[in-house]
Image 1 (cartoon, rainbow, N blue to C red):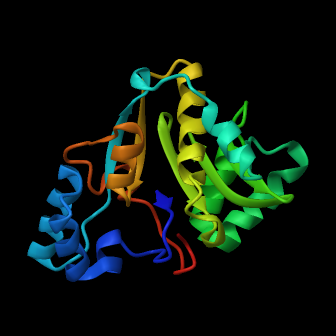
Image 2 (image 1 turned 90 degrees about the vertical axis):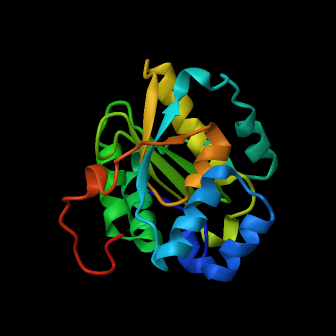
Length: 210
């Protein structure tokens, strides 16, 4: 699960509408997005989220993104002990209780499987893995005021490279809302017949639940 855009809770197609999808097709974006645009326009409904597969062994062991974010005044790191409840609370207030619960689960792992983006001693983004299922990446989110700085991709790479160092060969992006982002960032590929996938049978709370 991912949130980088202002239309939280809506698919990227619902946010852009038919006109946006037509414009995407005119600009010849990636084949993956073109396929999903045509599907959305044909049904006039949002596409279901799907799982995606990342080949970790194809990722370069390049952590330059940490320095790039530092140059922007943003630190990508794992939270420390006294910050545990602070980041869970921030995720809950910013993205909802479901993602906060997954963050709590990731912080229950040893070592922690969660990274945070910190600027001026405040959280501006987060990403987790092994939160709901082993080998699964997500959730991930960046505060609206700090998008457009490459922080989301940096958090994604931090988690995936951490998984690679632990011996994982693959990672699954669970219920990916923005397939185009993951495809371009790390070469993620759609997993056929993965809708509704692992999250399909979960019990959902009130609307404040992500």
